[in-house]
Amino acid sequence: MRALITETWLLASSLLIAFGLVGGSVVVVALGVLVLGTGGSARLWSRLSLEEVHYDRALSEHRLFAGETVDVTLTLHNRKVLPVPWVELRENLPRGMEAVDTKTTPGSSPGVNVLVRSTALGSRDRIEWPLTLRALHRGYFRVGPTRLRSGDLFGFFEREEVPRLPVDGIVVYPRTYALPDLDLDSARPFGEQRGGNRIFEDPSRVVGVRDYLPGDPLKRIDWSATARVGRLQSRLYEPSRSQAVIVALNIPTFARSWQGSDPVLLERGISVAASLARAAFEDGQALGMLANGSFPDADRPIRIGAGNSPDQLNRVLEALAMITNFTTSDLSAELEDHKFALPAGATVVVVAAMMTEDLAATLRRLRGDGHYVHVVKTARTEWDVPLHPIRVSEVATLMERFEAELETEGLTAAPDPAAVAR
Image (cartoon, rainbow, N blue to C red; front, side, top):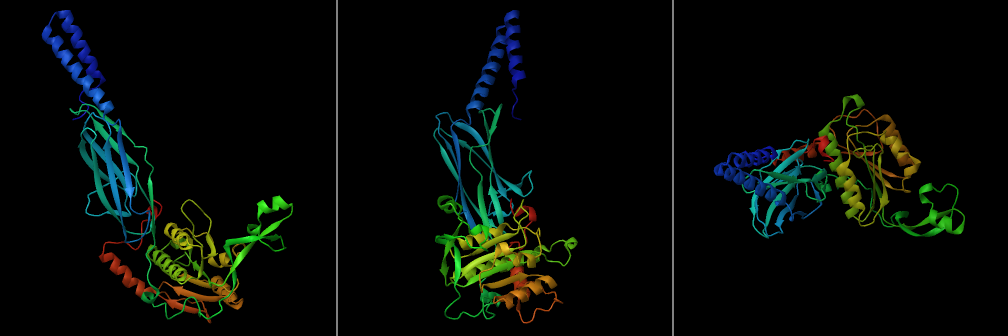
């Protein structure tokens, strides 16, 4: 048992010396000095044990897809001459990131596993522990914080501290599939790819300003230019011939909110939306996303305007990685919100497990306004809402097969909601 000698024992040893001196007993005095010296040395060693002991954590990746792995290297370095007789490292790992071939124990906090490593460090010694984490499902995960514990050679006193090392965040993107694997390639989810694609303004590329015109949205106003010239100025965007594709994800999986949410259907929809977004971006099309869900600790719908900047796909996948099952509003209302104006002639691909009359009516109106509209159905349940002439593709059967394969590999299709932002 550690901490055998406490301040009380040190006080007792001092009293022992005093009694020995008063009683004239050399043996008692020597015993008191021995206990006091041993305890004092142990106390001092304990206080110095973690001085100049530096801890570092290095990750090979901070962004990956579900099912992929990331290499982690944990390093302890004793930069002083005094050896460290023992040191224990406790690293917090998210449960959504499985430690491959490594034993961990459940932590005291929800969604956390603890990796424990113990060693001794000689003078100027350094040790590394390699570790591989496998992403079981999408989400935002944190590696850390870390605790170090050490003490004296005898184990009488201990010292514990949290190294000044920031927590490492890992974004795990949803699992994606090639469109032919979902039997969507032949369904032409993005419409006919004819020559002379539609022209739209790319908000990621500002080429200048002009005087404000009635009807310009507030987000278009360039306030810096307005201050310089003394009148309202609107940004001019570079026209693009890339086709604009908006992937719209309908979060609800049941008709009524009190029925809750089906986690498998939700994850299926997110994975299909990510697959469509990836295919559109890699095809060189301007990509945008809309979802009537929200990020953790937020209650706003997720909107990403159409663009083809290099990081556009990462923005969309990151949003899908962290989205929750909290529904902010009807998807129909979001599609008709003038604050998120769809580019003229944009393709709208709706991913949904359920369909409402309002959403169907909105999609028909969008089609009438010149948008190509395609619905990807992620559930087997029959919809009573008519969508003709809008094209509907069902992926439920194929996705069920993929989900069964994931289960056999020890991967989960549906994460614990608390782990999405763990």
